Structure formats: structure tokens, C-alpha cells
Length: 379
Image (cartoon, rainbow, N blue to C red; front, side, top):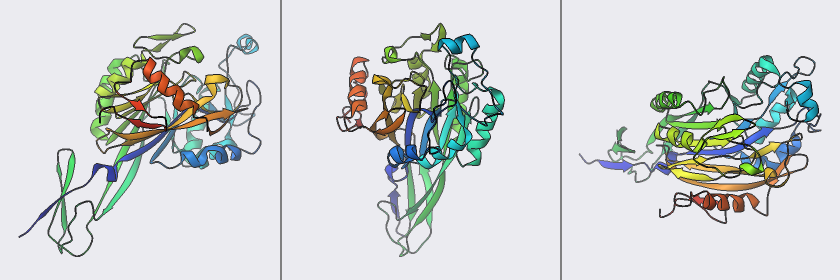
């Protein structure tokens, strides 16, 4: 009896993720600035660059509301008048524009998800779920699946007998007698998205006991584990990332380097940061990509988008089935007043990220080319 060993290439069934930073498509507070067409302009401006991936994820910076039912509660009158505190309430009817833009997952662990109280927070979770988006609220895990079907995998020989699929290490092998019809193999690849933040009601980025227990558990249950975190200082002075605890207005925003690397050590396959409202450097650590901040992607009004605050990016990541980094690319984005994301032909995000990687000491692990392609040096 003659058999053929078939190795399925990892790239043929890997995972593609498009990730962005903060998403706030208009708010009625502190000033009423909302898209005049329920967000259709936003879909047209950036949707074609965003939607082609298994997971398209961003950080929802605010909550969806029903006007007249939900009221802002976070800020005092004094802090509102002084412009020190912001509350973001997004009219509910804008939510479908995010789905039409291509988003599949929105994380909801940041310092604005309780701006309108727990009622608006729960309403936002239900709303996103009802329109086909996966919400990932505090202390919850979002799970999505990729259905994979193989027909005639690489190296497959044609023979008249069933195919038996077996596992061997990191590779999948198929043993088949020669046959005339195509071989077929199917499976679901499970992808878990877990949020971390710095609030008392979050899985905190400074609580390594949670990192050490939760991420290995998820790694044992799902094929791919993506960690989203909200942390670090804010503003144009927070471009650089260091292996130290960061503070903002006296609040501990965590040591994002120590957190992200520990998450990878415990089983995370991709770590995506947001919160500083500016882009930050990236690195490849133990074969996994860490993006320390993806900045302001879509912040329509009431958010500073001048200078570096308006430079953003779509991070496109390809992962092997074991979660390791297979490749990636930066799509440069710039926000046009009052916060419309468009493709940036000047490629300022690529130039900025290349500089930050070099200045922050990550260039030995990652190389970002002028084209935006992401490579591992020496590979």
C-alpha cells in the first residue's frame, strides 16, 4: 500500500487581523459634534482599507446612548466648565456605520465607557451585539471563529481513498492513498480577545496575578489569544514608551512594556495597546507582535487631532496558526477636521513609527520599511 505525507502550509490557514486605536464617531457632549449623515461619510472615507481581515478591531472610546434617557454622570460641573473632564455619548444610530466600515470587534475597557453610567454601558453592549458586532466589555472575553476549508492542500497527491488528518508538532499532516477526487479538510479556528485596563473594575494591566492565571487559561482553550489594553500616559509628550510605570494626572497607568511582554510569555499571540491618543512604537517579542499604542483612529469632534494626535494607522497583522508573527503592514491614516479618517498619501504614520522603533530601542526585533511592510530583522 502506497501512502503520501502531505504537510499543510501554515500560511494557508493563518489568521489576519486589522487593528486600530480609539474609535469615537461623534458625541453630544461636551459639544454636540456628530456626523450629519449617520456616519456614511466615515464608511466611504476609510472602509475600503479596513474591512479585509478575519478580525477587524478597535477600542470604543465612549458609549452609545438614547438621548433623553441616558445622561452624563462622570464629570463634575466645575471640571466640565474648566475643560478638564470629557464625557462621550454617541447617538445610537451611528453604530451601524462601524459595522459597515468593516469592524467585527470593539473592545470596551477604557476611561470613557462609564461616562453615561452603567445603563448606557449595558445598552452599548446589547446594541453592538444586535447589529452583528462582537463587544468585549470589562472582565469579559470576546470569541470569534474562522471557518477553514481545504481543497487539495499543498503537496497533496490525488488517490481514491479517504484522507486521515493527524497532528504532529506544529505541522498538520494528511496521510492519503492516491485518489482521483480532491481531498477536503475543515475546522474552526477560535480567536479570543481579552481586554485589560487601569480602572478598579478592569482586569488591570498592573495586576500580574491576573495575567499569570487568565492568559494561560485562554491559551489552553482557544487557538489564538489577542490582548487589548488601555494604558500609558496621554498626549504628544507620551509618544515614547519605556519599561517603567507611567502616570497621568497622578493616576497609575501601568508599565505597558512589562505588561505586554508578560502577556506574551503567558500565551498571548498579539498585544494591541491604546489610550495615549498618539502612535507608539512596536516590537516583535518571542515571535509575537506588540503594538504599544495605535493612537486616535476615528475621533469625530471633541478630541484633539492636531499634529501627531491626528496621525494614525491601520495595523494589518498575519499570524501563523500557532499565533506567531507571519507578516504585517502599516496603512497610514490621517484625520481630517473634525475627525474623518482618510488614507494618508504622505505616509506620516509610517515615518513616525519607523522613528519611534529606532529611538525606543526596538529596532533589533522589528523593521518597518518605507512601504509600511513589517519585517523581522534577519529572517
